[in-house]
Amino acid sequence: MKNKKTTNIDFTSLSDTEKVALKGKIYKSVDRLKQRRLRIRYAMGTAASIAFFLALGLYFFNSPVESSITDFVKSAKKVDVNASDKVVLILDEGENVKIDEDSTDISYSATGQKVNVGGSKVVDQRASSEKETVYNTVLVPYGKRSNLKLSDGSMVWLNSGSRLVYPTVFRGEKREVYLEGEAIFEVAHDANHPFMVLSESQEIEVLGTVFNVSNYLDDNQVNTVLKSGSVQIRYKPDTAGATTNEMKIAPGTLASYDKKNKTVTSEKVNVDHYFSWRKGVFIFKNNNLDHIMKRLARYYNVNIEIENQILAEETFSGYLDLREDVEKVIGIIKETTPLQYTKINERRISIN
Image 1 (cartoon, rainbow, N blue to C red):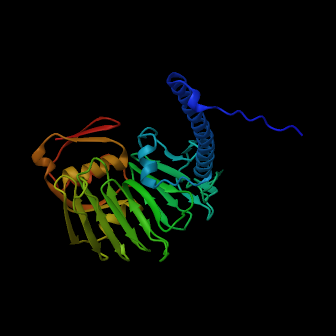
Image 2: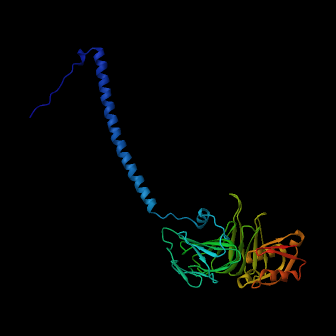
């Protein structure tokens, strides 16, 4: 076995210049050793970081990314309820199902995977899962109405010019739908899962009840009329930090929110006046002509113009059978209100 050779340096015999040079070599060796150790540590740290972020990315990729129904509504492509003259069902995959039949009923199975459309068509679709909620949309143009049975058994009657967004099957603690326009809800009772009707200006929370909501974008008021049960209404403030108005109403009550003045009022009413359109009847009591003609315009899908503002404020009370054509209905109003009308074409009537 060979012995290691030991080199002995006599530092006392070195000149000052040689001592400085030797000291520099020693410092350089120490620095190279430190840098080597740092590079090893950095490489190990980088590898650990990459592994951590890779695992984190895989976790989020495989984890459910849940969005609320309001997020879905905001991110969805803007649609015009009057783009078609038919009731349209928009499925999650983007498929549009136009209902050409006289019956515009839509009914979901308990799983949400089968949809009965009209009187004869059945549509298969994917349903909500633990990772993702699947939403459908119904568009009801002016001149049309539609009935909808949700997967939980709740019934919805949609009036002309309305849009309803809802999940194919309800998941989570709340059953949420989003409404623009007017609808009557008959909610299946489920004390553990409150039913929520959301809109731009308000939220309505119920357990099981019958009520009407009218919230058209071009109306200045949002009206909620309760027929049975109990509802809690929250009116959303326009600015962050503003006070949220809340109101709990009893059967036979109309709650109104003025979008312009941001005021909330309530009064006792005859609820039949607000539910009669479901049976093809309008009932008015001291309503002004402007309000009445706007409702008729939506129902019949015609443009009704009132030329005189004083006439627009005239009031009318009565019963209008909507099975008659629009001219006959206006003729009934004419018997008690001083108006004349001119039919310009099939889609336009002028009142003066």
